Image (tube, rainbow, N blue to C red):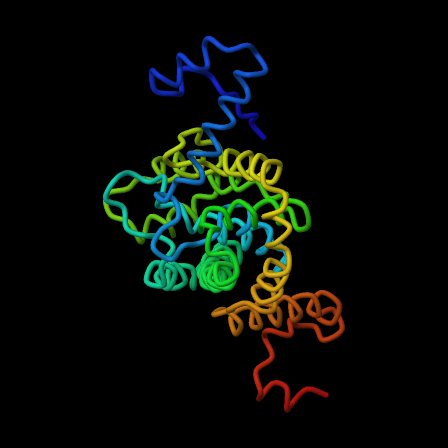
Length: 287
């Protein structure tokens, strides 16, 4: 994956001067301090549900259902943070249900993707419960403290190796996402997916920048992260216990169809016809 490189030109003039005049070591410290402060203060990527950060979504999803499309869906439900202005909230039940409807006649890839997208909502709901539980004991911990702490704990114990950029090449899934948007092209969705991973904007930090922030946070506040461990483990257990599968019957039919097809290969030569050609009347007459 692309390595994030911090440059002085990323920052406002005062911060550029800070970065440009310090020694190399102090320069790095200055940049990292700015990054952490920005992530702790940032609210634009969290949404009204006060959801978890991107890495947390990925790690939990992979431990809920080990399917790359499911994991990608659970992560990319936050895609509206990187879409053009005016795009609807994508981590919502209305958008997720619409995506499920559009995925219903499609491939298993898009079905698993839609299931992951819906799983994201459960992760956010349970994350809010964890925030309330931690803040009842530590009211000084902000929601962003807990986001960064949970991100770090996820990376330590349940990291995901799914690079969601592979969705950029999956036209069926891009079309399914675009179906819930207005005046948005697949190319804009591809760009949003890229930014989701690689954005270096402190106002809309991408996955890699959030991970870097979580690592810095854990280094500076190890005692806070330690205080979050028990609630994080409870959160992990609650979220990964099950998931919503609106396609259960369709998956079952697909499995049966594939089993019949496999059986056909071995049985048809003896019957002189395909099993799929046997209707009830034919079966009654069969020797």
